[in-house]
Image (cartoon, chains in turn cyan, brown):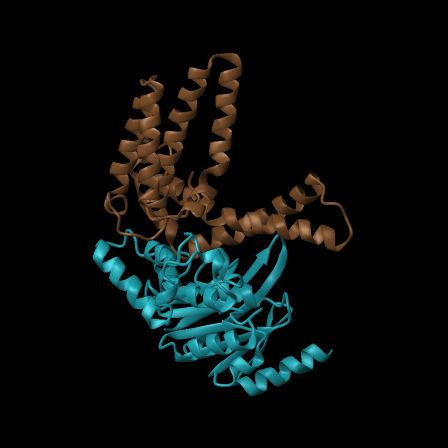
Length: 226
Length: 201
């Protein structure tokens, strides 16, 4: 899936959160790193239209994130920093099924797809669990399942291993690594990026590096040391 | 009565459609107010308790869910006893008690999404008049049920934070940060609803 930024910038209340940038993303695994407040999340949210560009445009698979907002959003799933907040119904299976409603599917098809996505992410045993009772790792997997059930081509994850213990961190790393879909991951967990194809480093709202993981991380360490 | 706590099962009530259960509940509620014979109301209360127990909920959990409402009903009955008569008080006690138990039985055997679907159907005429979006209202109901436990947990966290700093947890001191944090979360939740494409429904 080709994601194209054409002179896209974002300003909030007169403050520039992201300076104009133009680039094309097509790699299978893309990492986004940078200090807090550097523009990483704003950049990622531009991809599925959660944030609209103040200038320029962003397209995903040729769809403009403003003009074709709904269709573009359907191409990119988003996992928020706190995935608890994106689970809308109290029970996991219901939440997953809810995302499929009014898409012209029968109740049997919805149940089948819900079951399939739970199996895919190895969490069928969590189907009837309350969202607020899930552990950190379970919540991440549940959120990924609830987004992937609608079949996006790209998955954007905002700090997916944040606040997870080592075991759950490895579980999420493996889950991301095994995804056949394109994944764009914002992270402070630099080890996660080892096998990535491309890493974007943001600093003060600008793209400070666009390179393979090793080079981008090395530049990040220089910035963090200042 | 809605706590989002439906329990898994295959009982008759589980298999009955949400719409039918809600219609029967509404009809029974209206009908109960036409009955004033205490013995008949006692019989209804026993049947309602039997139905609630038949959901397979377990005695302790069953009582935990309704105890607060039943306590309120008890207070109302007590007020009736003080200002009217014993028979009035008993009629109120068993009439409202029956309703609470029936509503709890419906809640325990109906999923939140089924409730949401019925709310959307119910509100469709208002949607046709352009007064609201039925799906939005039903989504709001789902959100309340989903996030009520989290808000309660946060309330507990803020109280604990006060204690950890050696402060007494005054109501205002707890409520203000609770409201601010909840509103902050609401922004993220609204964004998540957009991200998952729920509002296009």
